[in-house]
Image (cartoon, rainbow, N blue to C red):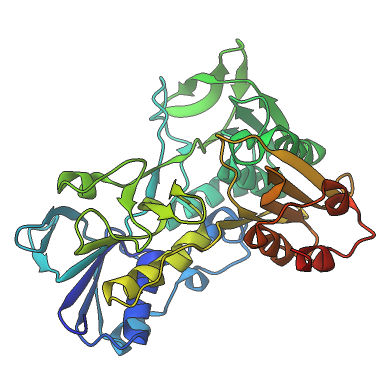
Length: 412
């Protein structure tokens, strides 16, 4: 495909990178980028990190500046949502009634926060974090100080807790599971992050579920839990996961299952339509099944991959999942995928108490995932090499800090 119209629904990192790749690859047709938000496409990780903490300017979030879109003849339709895909006429209908044509369509619609369905959930002072405006409103609330309750000890919840402590807030985190990040990291590493927050003055209550948000004069003043506790709070932040935005795909009859189902070339059940980023449940040859990854690196890699596939220059998308977090003085990078259906052994290397270590997840003796905390000399690259090497590893060698990690990785 060299001409025609490629329409991208979702002015996100994945969407902007897909548009960029189309031009880089020499596509000379129309490129239309549709976004429900009024802002230029931007990167979301800073919203719970440096932007929330006041260490980054808004302009620094943008994937490209405004001139880039004009210079590269990318048509921006911002501040208007796509409401329907008409596969019979190859058009996208917008909320304002306009119809936009497509020869090929790329869905980069992302995900939305799961909402609380509890009494008091609509009170003022209850925050979710997904868009830049959410981050700005939450930042204002944290700057005011006071008591903050965070519901959900996932990555967003813990990063917000760290930001709130930096602003001097009193912070309580409620987590339904026995440890934070249990589904992402398991009990041992999840407990490490729980202890990290406790060391910084956060009250982490695990095995607790909220039953209601308590209000006064229309504003939240606390959280009631299933343990019978009432936690005072001036601000409540809800971080209980996200749902992929699949309504457009489902509405036009595409296959959907925990995201828009795509093959290894990011093609949906309609060969004219591809999907990338948080919304895409992609077949990953490396894992022998479909995997949906919600992190920044997936959007960064899948957007261009979808563009190349549209141009019939694609290769099977099989980047290793990757994500990172910054909390207090801890920087962490993670690579790989921990399949919850398989048994895993965790091997630690380094000094956990000093916040300087690697961790490896082994299945059938092979490294399938790993992370490092503050080990920037070695970083995540040796972990990625071990995963790609797919060789059986000696757990004792992995744990042996006298054996250079690069050499261990090179041996696979």
